[in-house]
Image (cartoon, rainbow, N blue to C red; front, side, top):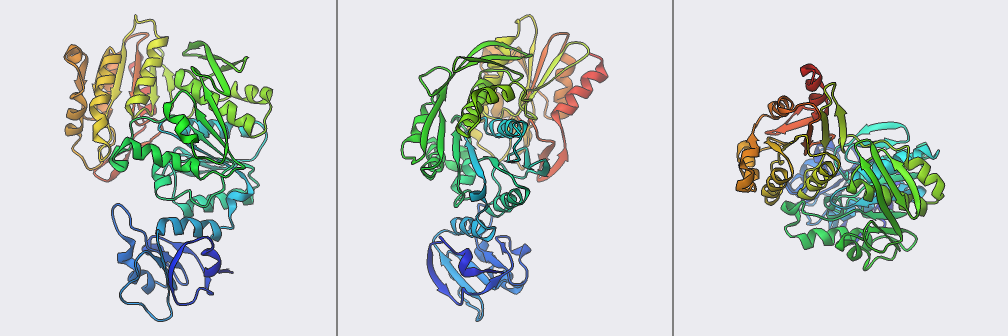
Length: 487
């Protein structure tokens, strides 16, 4: 039996009306899910304000309401708790409700613009290979040991996070690797969790529709490191100028990794090809199936984190050499006709440039590089011309198309992407709004030894148009169509 007074531990209370010494059944912030003897937490969201549903929640059986603003009509027998921030209160309550599960395993958060999914997923792979029971909370998958659950958000809400962590406790999980998004930090989804470590990958242009300025976006990421305990480690990319910023106020033990600058963990790329990459890490050589500069950073972060979590150098290098690429992250298919199709989640200017630079550094320049790319709707519009500029400057042919247009007109999105194309690249570019047709067009344009990059959606197996998600898998479509063409 769980009492309201116990799950309010660490919550900053401003006023209480009613009794907190009452047994509660469950916690919800969605009024539609509220049942008998539940607690309803009223949260001000970007679309709706939970305070408008307090009365409905009480009608459905809520015996306690957590809110930032007391309702005008206080019902006798119902407990009302006023707090300064409902999202923060929910995070502490969720942690308490599920028995503080993060304290019973080593939880490592990975944050940054690009590389979060790859680093978290590869650490999951590595520690699983090392014989541990491991958990993963990522954009692609949620894993509790070997059991897989569908992922809905990069960083789920705090109730979902803690319920998964509790499942991990029950399954005997020792390590959990978790993507920590800027939205998740800003909305207190990770508040109250005990982290054993934090990893910073990089910071580039992204989510400025939500955070408004780059400085705000950076400072939100920094807040994650500010909150790490002294017992944790803070590992940051020393080649990113924001890496040092992350370490400024943290109590955690500070470590850096880099390819170019002085750092605790250093790497050098000795060989780089479509078959893999030979790295020298702290004077030790290791072969990895992953390729490209950006993956060299990811592998170096994984190596550093694994050592900081107790693996030996030889163990870390052995398992790194066995790691497989993450779904939708530089995932490639070579057709019968020797056409290489690459699917990558690159949906920011920096990520797209990294992928195209990697391909251009490997290819012989005797073949075409055909890029299929678009931009998502209802998201940061300022990056669209930049994506168009990068794609057209670094490819031999470009097909602009829809990504997830959501509620926007896909043709208008494409126009904004096209605005970044410089005159000397006009002849390279065409636009095909329908993504399926765009991929087929790229396949038809390709000849033996050519390379097709399909960027933006990566692991996603759907396309969202006007609020409706339809099945759509870039990798499946391109590989099947190339086989059909017998190219």
